[in-house]
Length: 124
Image 1 (cartoon, rainbow, N blue to C red):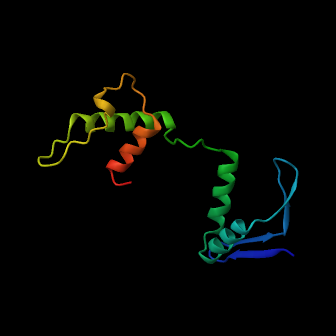
Image 2: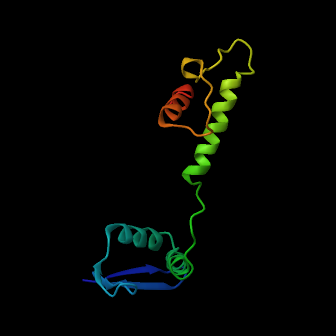
Image 3: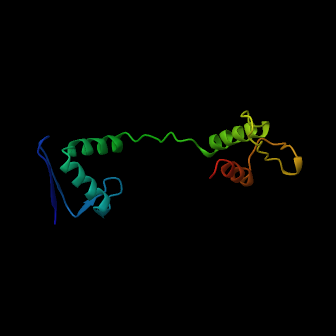
């Protein structure tokens, strides 16, 4: 049974069936609960046309997410580690020492233990 979603303010009416054909794969799919919830939300808030146009824009012009990769995160963690090894600039604060057996790391890479120590130092 299809459902009708209406945005009276923007004069938008959308009839949604129980199933749809995915235009990328050609397969029939059920309408997910999340899609139904978004349609209801935007119909109630008079933003249904904006949801549809945003979805079409994303479909026609997909953008790659510019998130920091693990390499960039590791570089930042390494910088934090180096700053902490040099000592805290605030007086009366203990120096956090990550050096095991007083050895200076030869490589610029962090291992999992280093990451755990950094997180613990910041209360995580």
